[in-house]
Amino acid sequence: MKYRVNKNIVLDTKCESYVTALSFYEDKDTLLLINGNTEPYTFERLMMMYENQRACQELYFIYYNGKMIGDVGFSNKDIPIVILPEFRGKGIATAIIEFLIKKAQKYGYKRLEVEDIYNYNIASKRLFESFGFKPFKKTDKGYSYFLEI
Image 1: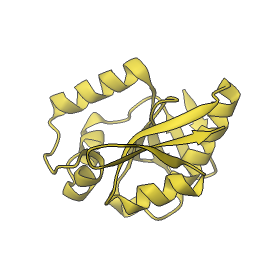
Image 2: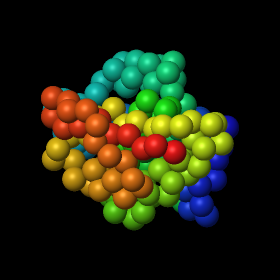
Image 3: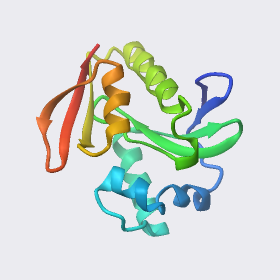
């Protein structure tokens, strides 16, 4: 299923290439921001992660101007988002989070949570805080955040 976020961004439940998806999880800086370590994913680990995500979240692949550039999970308990480094800072994540908040409202969610944002992931903290998310639980490397809808 496809969802048009805006004229440039589409969220799709279908992945055009798991080889491309693997590249999202090979960049050391990205891995540090999302996992707290720089160990690249193997294809098997990637597939296991996607399988686990699909079991408890909606999983979307992010397409920007037709190119797959990341993925995002969505549930009321977490919203993990990964975007290739060269596409960060362009408002893509902002548009996606805004879209997902509206989706949460349609679903009747009263609260959204983000499981863990590391203290040094400043961009992610700013992104979620710009929508009103607030820290509520200390984690090993940062905080869990919530938004009352």
